[in-house]
Structure formats: structure tokens, C-alpha cells
Image 1 (cartoon, rainbow, N blue to C red):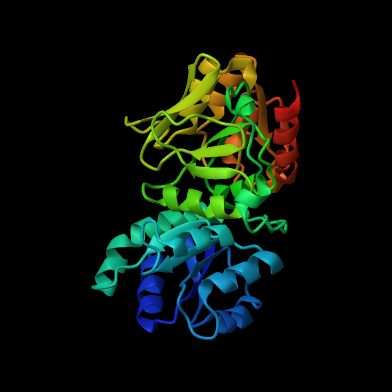
Image 2: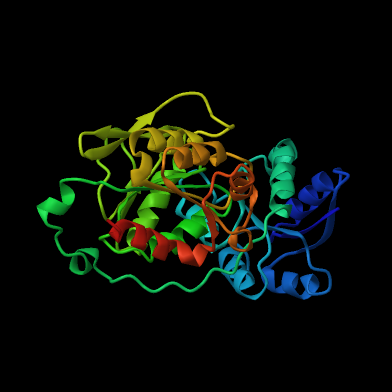
Length: 350
């Protein structure tokens, strides 16, 4: 039985969600509250497995409450709001704060829309119940001006990218990627990333990370060069592959059917890295549900690449790394806070 607590200042939303969720045999709504402070009092008496949380509420907004919760007692949370539309900054802020799911309420016809979409919310709650949110370590602030902190790289450094780092992640990955990328410096190797994320979200996600990191982070475009000190994130709704052109690498952004139910797919990226970079690559499979990327990581290892799975204790969801380890695809298992140093050392080793 999954214990759910609903925090929303609308009595109608609380009533409709409770009615919809309690029709499911494995879900029990153990409480509800109009704002986070009331919620906290009740939750301390019976702590939920999953929190369904609005953003706009009196006394304390949902994002602030979520950040507080992730420090004091990390709990799987689904943000349920009219504000969390595709590409909205608040959506990325919620994911960065630790939300493991986003559910968008309609602005009109609220009761009907919630009833119609309750199946989607139930799926998210079932997935969230299998998550183990991590209290994220505090991150050093990046220099206020990227240009001031990042000296011009000499032309020789940009002329070739002989080492590639490929990262694949899903649930919990928005936080995990921030932890990793914020600690990298402009001399790090070129990075290619697949984060399972819908279309229109990835551009805003990359833009947000770019503002936090000393390296350049952006959504990939077709035939973008892979450069040192840069991370390219696959666009939502498109696959991304690595392509080699002489001594240089670029990415191909392509349409196509979902692979392992995902587009972009980690397997698609990892298989291309195995083929194009071989032993000149490092592959890291990170927190996420399912098995996307495990077979691709095995292909990378068989091609001579170094391969790593994020450790179970540091994952929000251990599904993808667990499957990679089960298949013998990973050389080692490493904690999240060790990955930045591992990437840095890999890039400097020649």
C-alpha cells in the first residue's frame, strides 16, 4: 500500500484527487492540507511514501517546502500545478529541488481534467514510490561571470577532442547532473548527455545548467562539434548519436521511433559512442528507472571504453545502473560525489 499525502490550497483539488486515488487498490491517501506548514504537522504523525504538492500556496510555496524537505527528510514528491507547463522555468526549478514527477493541472475544467488524468498521476505515484530521493550535497557557487572565470582556450586545444564522456540518466538525473556538471572545469573533456526528458524541457534545462556551471552546457543541435569544456544535452523528442570526422567528434540529432520506450534513448547514444570513439570514451550510467542504456554501456565496454555505474546508495532510482551491473556492463560502481573527479582525471590522463 502506497501512502500518499496531498498538499494543495484548493479544497476541490484535494477532494477530487483523494476520490480518484482511493479508487486504486494499492494507494491510500493518509492526509491532506491546504499549505505546507499544516501538512508538516500532520505528516510528522504519519509520514507518507509519496507527496503530491502544489506550487502556489499560502504561507510557504511548494518549491520552498520541497527544498526544506529534501534537507530534513528526503521524500518522493510529485509537483501538481497549473504552472508546470512544458518548458516552464518553475518545472525545472521543481525538478532541481528534488521532485521526481510533474503533473500539470488544467486551468479550466479542473474537476473533469483531474478525473481524466488520474490514471497518469497514479502511474507517477507508483513510480515515485520506488524512488529514494537523496539529500543533495551543497555545491560551490560558480564565478558570477563565466567569461571572466574561463580564459580563452588556445586554438590547439579546440582543434581535436580525443576523449569523450557519455552520460545517461533518467529519474533523479536533473539533480544528479547538476551535482556533476557544477564541479567540472573548462579543461574537462567533451561531454554528451541523454537525460530522459520531454520535448521543450531540455532547452530550458540546459540553459539553467549553463548559468550554474563553469563549463558551457547547451541543448545539442544537429552536427554540433563536441569540444572540451562543453556538455551537449540531447533534445527531448530526438535521438542523439556521436559521429567522428577525422580527429574531431560531432553529434547527429535524429528523429526515429522510441528505443526502450524513450526518445532520446541512452542506448542509442552509448552504441554510437562505442562505434565512433571506442577506447577513447568514458561511459557513465546514472540514476533512472528501467534498463535504457545498460546494453549500450556493455557495447561500450566491449569496444574498450571505460564504463561506470552510479552506486545504489547515491541513486534516486537504481534501475538503470543495477541492470548495467547485472549485465557486466560496468567496470565499477561509483558514488555520485565521486563522478566529477573521475571525469576530470579521465580527461587529464593521456
